[in-house]
Amino acid sequence: MLPWKKRPAWLLGLVGLALAVVYIQSFADVRQFEAHREAAVAWTALLLIMSCGVASVSAAIEGGWDRKATGPLEATTRPAALVVLARIWPGVAAGAIIQLCGAAFLLAKAGPAPDTFPWWLILALWLPLPFHSLIGYLLGRSLRVFLAVPLALLLSYGWLGFTWTSPFAPLRYLSGPAISGCCTATTTLDPRALWVLAIFSALALLPLLLLVPKGRPKLKLTKAGLQRSVAAALALGMVVGASLSLAAPLGYSPLLALPASDSPCDDNNPSVCLNDIQLSRADHRADIAEAFRSLEALGLPAVRQVRSSDVGAMVLSEDGVANVVVEPWMDREPVLHSVASTFSVAIQNQDCGNNGGGDGEANIERFDWALALESWAESELARSFGTQPPAALSLEDFQGTGAAFKAWREVRAAEPTAKKRAVSATYEALSRCSVPSAAELGLP
Image 1: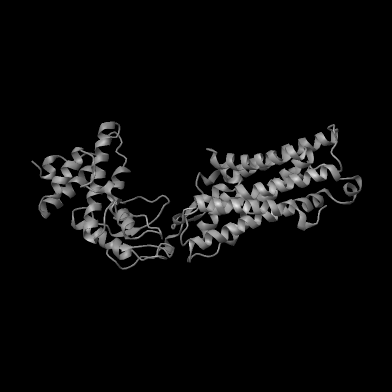
Image 2: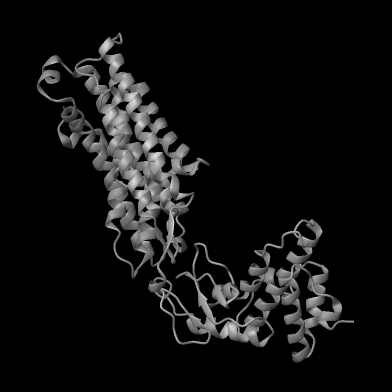
């Protein structure tokens, strides 16, 4: 066995680390994890593409060397598990270093954050490394190196890619990359996703160890070897089945809403309830409250409380609770857009059943009116706060010629009382799954 300083894992690790840095610089959007340590570390789940590949290829090379050099003395004096451990630990260590460096890089990009350091998440993302290393080692012991190395890399990438993109949700949690979907400012990772990853990664090692040959590989499959192979296949199938059963309740996205106690409400009117992550870069609560008061004065329904949740929350409830998107990276303009879109999104999400719901043209017309309502609200808030609305949402710049936008341009020119009546009539009509008439808008 080579001295630890000359193991192939270290050179492969440098290559993997360089690829990880390039990958982060190319694809990591800091808005996904700004001021959020858990989200930053969860993003490193995508780096398993590099770290698991390094672990698998390194073990395949060492397995190939063992294939040529293993003699009867080592096979009889050292347990197979210790032999395997001695060969795969450098690859596992190199992969862990890639994951750790990636986490440090992303945490630096995320900047100061109020949430605790997710050390448990870093450890969980190390767990797939021994599994990939052992597969690589088995390939190296069974095939020539020039075949084992590319096959080890292909199987590692193939397993990660297949599970990550699988439409069968439970399968996504057996490899790790699905964890990269965590988290927004108002969600946290479901710990069951980590338990599934940990249980599968640990238990899957046991049947693979049954396949490790003792001494030099034999050209013919013996009866004992066949029995071990069958037992390993059955055991691995049981591990996969049990892991899928544990992952079944998770669904496609492994997120849980943060408890309401993490988002205390202020004394604004309406009250605004945001958590520390959302407030870590700027406090927009006063702007949000003022924006909703402005829209109420212009004819839209009153809102008594504003919350921000990504999991199972209505955009606008009947008891006056609005749900807006607030992330740390947002400045005033995107926050105002989130407020302005509240009422139109609530209308678009409304289930109209058979009352126009089955009529494609009616749905398109309602959608146009909802979009016009959003454009008007965006423009009004931009005027009040001195900001510039996006051109695509500006009534003046919108290129459409639909009846809804034509009507809203006329409503906008009306005197304040008539404008307020028109806004109220429009929202009430859209809430009834219809569109406002010219008479309701006060237009000729």
